[in-house]
Length: 166
Image 1 (cartoon, one colour):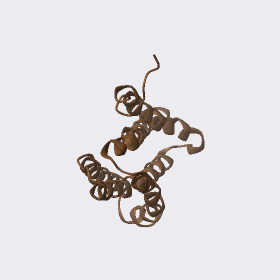
Image 2 (cartoon, one colour):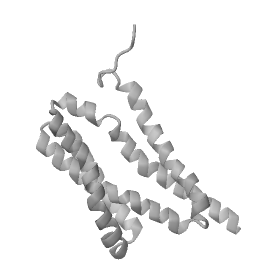
Image 3 (cartoon, rainbow, N blue to C red):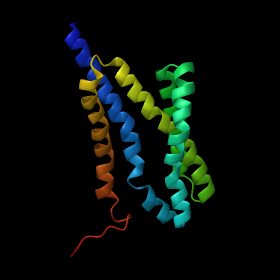
């Protein structure tokens, strides 16, 4: 395999990794606030759940960059975080009262958010010319978000309170 073919293969694999990474986020984010309204959560509770991703982002900076990068391989860290975080997100879907919902969701966020920086680091470490090639790889994340979130807009719009003009 030539160097160009090998780099092309790596770019495609990283592109697919980014599709999966950001598709996870797009699968729930587009509908979470309308879902919490359906559960009867008040605006303050919705605000707290909405803040969970930001809280996890601040905490995740220290965890993923300082601890995980030095003590675990990126692959193991991603596998653990996505499996346990995925279970927490599934558990969130089965909660109907606020505090159990919030506990499951903050657990998910604390495990998921650091994976974003780890996947970016993996991409930069494996691209021959990151400044030139990362845009293509990152575009995979945008495609992943669109592919999983866009159908929800149409399939669940009635439950979200969207109505057609007649």
